[in-house]
Image (cartoon, rainbow, N blue to C red; front, side, top):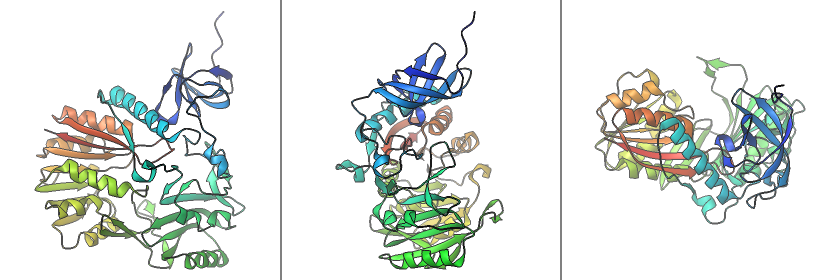
Length: 427
């Protein structure tokens, strides 16, 4: 008689023994590995299976029988946000969460990239001196329920959970009080805090009364705040149409080590309040003193500007026309030029002795990395926010003749499953 196969909904008692990617912990059973969300290595937990595959299963904790010494009271509960997604280490000591992230990343580097590296994950300044890890996000998205109540989505669900405080957000975004408003007609709110102000980006089809309320809230804040409206469903060449500016300039202003940057309010910028400073300094350090540099996925020109200020002739390439316009303005008077282009379609790279790339979480991909490998560049500085895709791309760089000279991890997303990496490859 064969044993019954595990099924979704089954309940078990497990003792996970290792961290895993995605903030889970891995428990080894006779049926295979079970990745348990909400568990820590060494704990005894009661779980419910949520997914069953041939070689592994996933589960969620229903009860902690024997807690880890590193478990702390649920920070989300203190925000009135119990059960929301995206804060995987809400019940974990902050320093210990960095150890778990480092070990999970080491496993991915070895398994996917064949790379053995004694990786450490370091805190950014906000958390280095006793910071809580709960007040670092300068960009936040709130879902808005059918009743007009903003909140965050429950983990693994589309259900909107009202919150008494927006977890992880900087004070400036909580001070807006938008999570306590009723805003019918909206489906989403995007909130941006920047130097000397910020922006409220409303998504949906609200009535004028709601838009008037948003204008009033923005006008009451210290500094310069903008209000923008994006109507869902309108797209421009496959991308969301630019939002309409209802108040203010529609721009965000950032300042990094005395250098000012401007960009569209809905444009990409590093999310952690300290990330732009730390990452740009690391890129400059790892790049050495290049005569020429190519900045792929350059965004509004953060890395390009500092490379150019250090004396390099820089070419920045990015797929967004709006970002390129901002980069050109930010680098005015510096030896830097910028081009709009899809990185994966370049085929050949402009000549440069150093390539810097900071791709989205999906990574650069084999074609782009091989194009870098076929170039004359002798140095590659890679900024990544995903260990798995970095390991995949790093393997291709190694196969192209590069060596991994240095790799560091940064806790640029405290209490979440994500980690930032800075690496330099040479040949």
